[in-house]
Image (cartoon, rainbow, N blue to C red):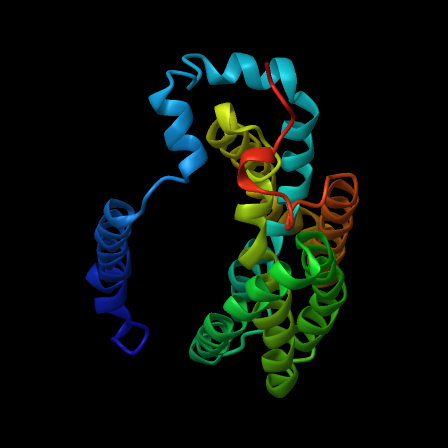
Length: 260
């Protein structure tokens, strides 16, 4: 789309990627139709033990785990600050060619398709928490490399920064957090617990580009606010993860607190 003439890009080209995302929705629905619920959930459903008001039970029995997920979800911030704000800053402030930045992001996510399953497998061997903490630590440091490279218009280092931020750090966390968050909660309200905590965390991190832009503008369009905010978010996520229970060896029917 970026190869189109500017007038065509502004007229209709920008719409194509958005409409194309409908394909992902269809693929997601097809995959979901083939998935089977875990046996422990099916058993609870057949026994009539599925909660009719899961949110009420959730907030009664595991409110701290909801809060924990909210702060642990701050790890998602790197997916906003690096490929979204980073691209905007590079093209609008540093005047780096948009094609260069887009290709860097494409390469980062393409290689993450290889590294992410490996990190998921690693979490089954050594635990969820070490992989999540490691990914956050790498991300907290790598964002400084990435944004410094943008500030210096150093293309090779931009690619290195994308590799560290997306292929390694983001892949580490993105591979593990969905199952880790779900495993915190009792089967009776597992979906509600994960969904509420995760979405609230995403809402908070969603404001990160706006906050960064305000900080950057107040500091002569500096790049460091983006790196600083991302690092703080990663450290908060680490703190929340460290307070959680390790779950990778826990049987499905024993996950979450015991609820009578």
